Amino acid sequence: MDHKDLEVWKESIELVKLIYTITEEFPKSELYGLTNQLRRSAISVPSNIAEGCARNSDKELIQFLYFSLASLAELETQIVIAKELSYLNNLDNIDNKITSIRKMLLGLIKYLKNKVNSDK
Image (cartoon, rainbow, N blue to C red; front, top):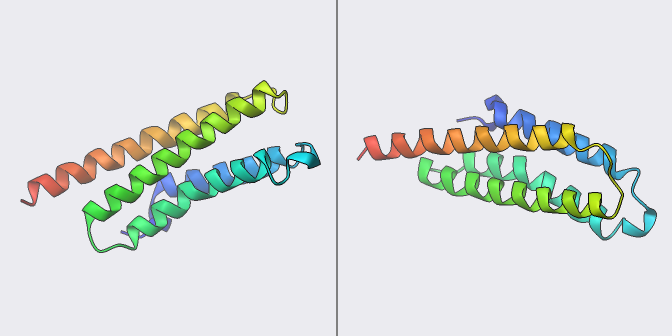
């Protein structure tokens, strides 16, 4: 499976770009704090999808998809913190993208688990 063909990978790349854009407006004092954390969490989502696809088995891919889900949850938490600190106002676009990516990841995990179980 080539990660570049996966819609979830493409959407998570779009999320990274969105996070980079919104964090440009954060205070410079947050550059090595929340800005860096948000960017690292966002980057981790498509990176883990790509790494999982490069592995030898569907079981390993599933593991890395779970890592992507964890990074997505981390990102979501950091976005809440940024909102609480009044660094972000309208979160609809980000929230919708995170929800969409989460659904795609869970769908892919379910598909792969069924595939692994049917191969036994």
